[in-house]
Image (tube, rainbow, N blue to C red; front, side, top):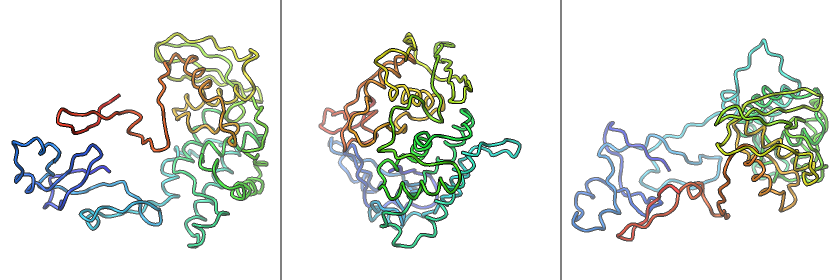
Length: 340
């Protein structure tokens, strides 16, 4: 929770707030009554005299989550953000002069229709397994940037279309089959082709997103490389992407150890990296299996771009903070966070 103190109006802070590092935010009047000679007072942080909660990241109905503590419960305002409005606001500028590919236009219509349908859904829709989940607010922005940098062919194969949908809507990997069937029907009615089954489709596809495959990687300077992609229709795209300072490993995927699945996922990794995306959002080739050669893919990806690999052991309860910070024990036994 992020609490922002501003010197405006009167104090609204009452009670205390527990922080993750073991310290507590308390009322400034109570802090003045503490014995400053004791080390225990370091566990308490005084709030500003004009403390106000001006912004908070918290779930708001109809979304599930945990409510605020009583001191904050009645002291903030919630603003509803229109899902469709946020989608179009984050989308790249749509200039009338540009001729967008039909895949982008029809997928955009499907995304907006799903968002509109979710807004008028009945209360039973929240528990219905046949309801399509809302697309992320970044779905249109990711789709437009991808189609801008890598122009799609006139028709995508069922497997390529399924990978594209899972890339802009990763939660569909865990959606029930009936949900995927509803989305497949919408894709067929929109005229963009059949939507392949992400669990049973052919994983031996050596192409990345939108049918592109990486062929050449060349260094431009210390922090930049030039990657050449070739599409399924022979279109060649050359893009620049960030790189590490280490020596680049020679790019050769024609060896026997590189399977078509490995080549396709590695090309998708390089595309996501060139677009500035997190490669963790690239869907696996076989979602139903426990292993997709993740460690080998990451190692090859890093060596081709000159990066050094650092292994972080993760578990289910691990939060985002533990990935970049670690606990530190002070001399008095209290704990705090410090960068790794």
